[in-house]
Image 1 (spheres, one colour):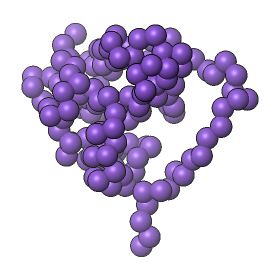
Image 2 (tube, rainbow, N blue to C red; image 1 turned 45 degrees about the vertical axis):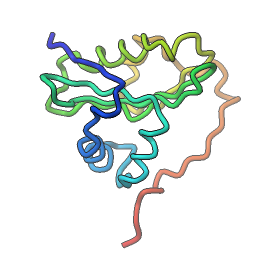
Image 3 (spheres, rainbow, N blue to C red; image 1 turned 90 degrees about the vertical axis):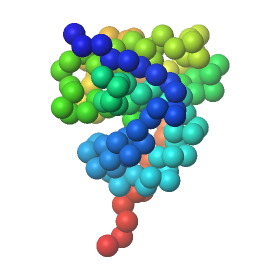
Length: 143
């Protein structure tokens, strides 16, 4: 299995690549403005995944570092999938010192339940207590 180097150094992030993927290829952030991504990166614990020095993976964790975290924007570039990079990225995230001892660690996924179950994620214990405000088309511009 090729080795993925995982770093939380934001200066190494290829923001153009992240923006291109999230705004154009993801199913959850279509049309994401670059300015919004910049603010999100600035206010999150970010994980860049690098193969041979080039960024091929990314994830953000929104957290207070004490009680909760929410994992978002996880991706491996399509041409780099099936190499074990998603597992290496998740292993690094789950081992990060700032993410230990949290009472609640959440995420939303449409298709990667099997991956996340390997790291202890499951259905909410009390789904009736969860609520959300969700605006799926917030990044769409009027034509």
